[in-house]
Image 1 (cartoon, rainbow, N blue to C red):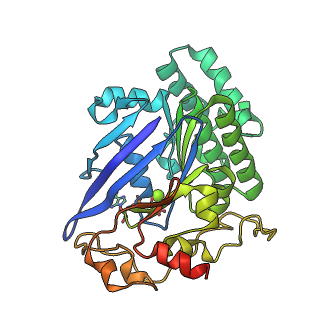
Image 2: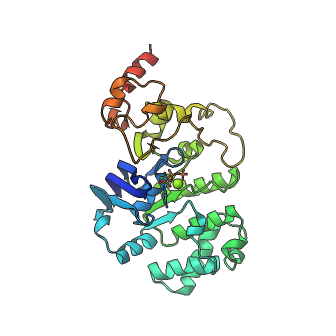
Image 3: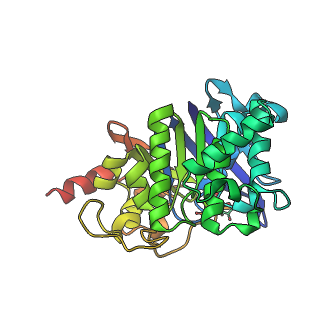
Amino acid sequence: MLAIEGLHIDLPSAGGRSRVVRGVDLTVEAGETVAIVGESGSGKSLTALSIMNLLPRGAKRRAERLSFANRDLSSLSARQMEDLRGREIGMIFQDPAASFNPTLTIGRQLEEVHIRHCRKGRQIARDRAVELMEMVGMPAASTRLSQYPSELSGGLRQRAMIAMALMCEPSMLIADEPTTALDVTVQAQVLKLLDELRKRTGIAIMVITHDLGVVASVADRVAVMYAGEIVETGRTRDVLATPQHPYTKGLFACVPRIGSGTAPRPGPGAQRLPTISGRIPDRVKLAAGCIFADRCDHVVDPCRAEDIPLVARSSGHADRCLRAAEMQVAHHG
Ligand SMILES: Nc1ncnc2c1ncn2[C@@H]1O[C@H](COP(=O)(O)OP(=O)(O)OP(=O)(O)O)[C@@H](O)[C@H]1O
Ligand SMILES: [Mg+2]
């Protein structure tokens, strides 16, 4: 459904151009959920925004391949892109303010999306809005539709945002931190909803999250981003069970093991990824070599000598660590 190859994004910065995303490859098949994880500032949102051509002003995007349903996204006009965005790709933004117009009611905005992109008339759009608000577990759905975005709590606004993204039954959903403002119960409902939707309609889902619980419960595959690069990728169960890259290992270290029976603490952000000491490198003057070298406990001279490619260790499980194989052997005696 979606294929990204060799994606680079540069942003203007004080010292020149900052290379915030470098050489990202990512695919999402129909009916598949792929998660992107990584600490703050690693380039997850920019990667998602670049697909829809929604990057901040001054940003430069280039890619060897950027295709959706076999169409080349980089050749679409602004008009075609906007059409695609409403009808075929639903997007849940990290910043809810970016999704809603504060001066229009929620209902009006949901209806407009439908009328504009599905062209079926006001009454059908209204029915669809009620249906979706109920589907995302919105209490008193029809009453909520006459309210303004500011009248809803963060959690309800997030549900309305999900409803809006799904108005035209898109074939792909890009969800940037879709459950962060939700309490655990609602979060579980929303995740269940997305999973049912995927099974029922074969929608392709890209989900960006800090929450390993989300990854474990919905993602078929996961890509771990660090400082603008994918440092590890693979099937969720493989990456969670045997992380290869020291960054991934660090990221997972403080999290209760999935399925270990340890009850996660309730509340939003309960399983947020821990922070690893040190700073993300300055991306204006990037040195050659492994991008994680300065923060890595296992660094050796060759790590700094040249850029490290993404190498597959087993089917679909790949990482950018020069020493992954060696450390794996050491670990198993
Ligand atoms: N509008 C912008 N103007 C300037 N710099 C930006 C802008 N948006 C993002 N950046 C920078 O680009 C880098 C990647 O940002 P991005 O938002 O993709 O990170 P992220 O992985 O989504 O982080 P988070 O988990 O905090 O959402 C960061 O260094 C950020 O400071
Ligand atoms: Mg983000």
